[in-house]
Length: 399
Image 1: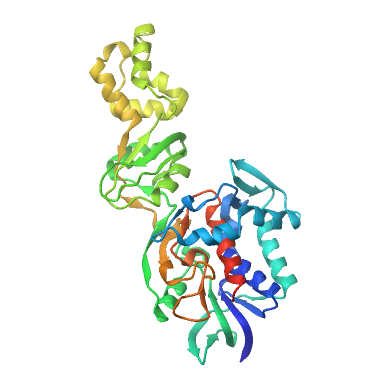
Image 2: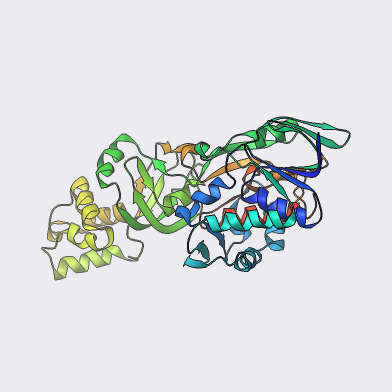
């Protein structure tokens, strides 16, 4: 039996952050992970360059059934705190979009920072170690693992959610929560591409690889969201992806209809088309649309909608219909690609049962939940990493 103060289950972003923070306080810390490599999701994130935080991250960038829960942690450990850590380790970074910070070189740099911090603080990281059983006895947690038995005072569950099972994701965190009497809210895939109905897929699949700048929202109705995202949309051979689709997917529910503005920069498209009809009546709509949508997409869309005539052949009423199709294209996805390609898991451990200050379960002393396992999910753009750093650091101050 190995005795330590703290066991952290999960060598991902939140787990490693928590381990280093606790070890710097003088606690003996052991990190356990069933994978053969630490931080696998860190390594593959951001196209291999890791969007490690967002300088503009606020509680408004997170989705939760208990929205106020994340406020405390995000205020106590901010993006600037993590940026200071990154710079102290000599990691070069860039701001690819407002607030979104990426490594100049590789996401390996962020993992190096975390593992170095664990080493300096004295936290042990043990890989290839599955958890077979967890028990609470006499105020201590007893873990039976593939590498032996461990006893600890504080147990931190940081083993993530269900997204990207090929990277080793399991439901262990949720199983442990339920074992100790905590409620786990329904889970679903978030930040995930959409699949399409056969008709739309038939028309769009040949355009796979085409990206256009759009604004997307969910049409008012059951499960509708007031969110609107202005970012690129990528057409794939399975459906719709790209930042705009990933963002709105976290708010989409089966049966909801997407409303896609294909020309978000055009505030009065009807007036523009009428003017063009007067000035250049023989202009083809596809030629006009090509500048914003690419020639390939514009030609395909006009063929699909039978918009092949010069503008002079369209009445005012027909132009109004065209504008409606372009500014509020209605798409009802058949579903999403699910956890296979989802970046995050929505839902999870109900945060009403956790302390927002310490991340400890209110009714189970010494049991902590952090990171993706809890019901706090960020938008795309570095927010989920910031939640991992903040929740991990906060728990590390108390375990």
